[in-house]
Length: 79
Image (cartoon, rainbow, N blue to C red; front, side, top):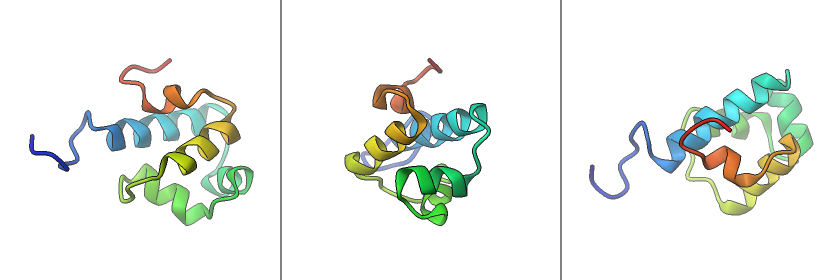
């Protein structure tokens, strides 16, 4: 896979998959997570759809809003 290509095991794909799973585990809507993280709900949705190249600052905001370690959002296997 070429550099910059978004595949099933890319950091972007893992973030999207883990973010959606953690949000669902907590019974949160994208809107509720957006409010907790002070990010717009459409931004949360675009992260979950792998449409964004997310900054570490925003990954950290999402992790804090979900009360998980940032590593949990980037893990290859669910933690």
